[in-house]
Image (cartoon, rainbow, N blue to C red; front, side, top):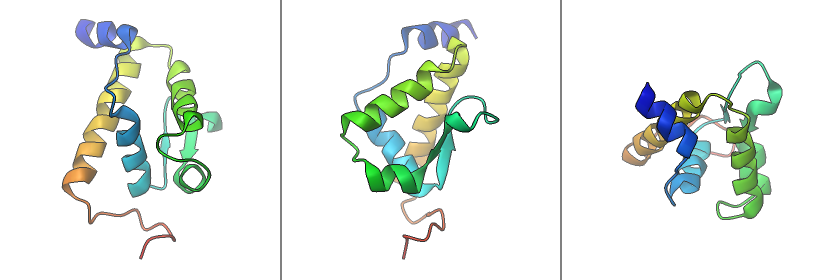
Length: 104
């Protein structure tokens, strides 16, 4: 717990982190980052993927805003670790899709 809290305070993310989140969005209908009861913490994959690009500053700012709303450092770090694990899972299983309407 102390390590995770320390990492969350430092909030170090790899250069690939945004690409990893983008990958997760391509495989899901959306993400909830933070308190699931707050609708502002929900990211719709369809909306983001249609309005933004992976390398766009608006996408980076959206994700940064979502993480800034997580006040507990250890929870922020756990969320980062979870998203990285999900991205890795989807990278290893590219045939898995969310069933979104834009998939064939």
